[in-house]
Image 1 (spheres, rainbow, N blue to C red):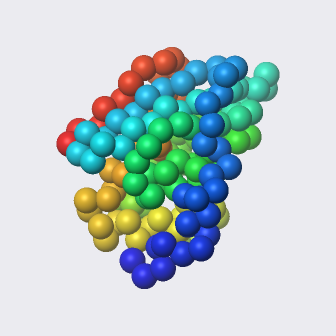
Image 2 (cartoon, one colour):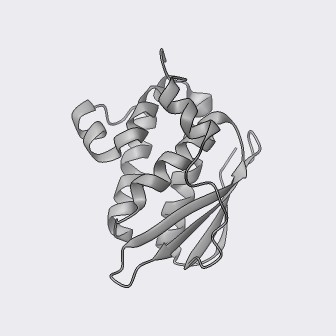
Length: 151
């Protein structure tokens, strides 16, 4: 856990680049973590070539959920829905301690790989995963709905 709340992490919390409502979103999806009250709406605008042209989010929650959402938004721009879903699943495996290959995580997840130590904090895993689960479900469903994580 040492160093999770470093300057780079805190920059995603205090100065998020992707925290804004998207008026011309192709789709949006709401996510809720009832165990702690974190809530967010995730927005995606798809490009003509089928990739994610823009991603953003709105909502409130702990520093981990907010930083994770910002990191994920940045990572998803330019990805196909299939690539984005695979990254969401990889992130989930990382924060649950199922994937530990640091080179793979750093290469594929970029900034979000700094959240790998969440695997040592079981109560915070759902905080880190909220945005990722929300995006994955949105892309799989292709529509607007709400995702409530199990407590």
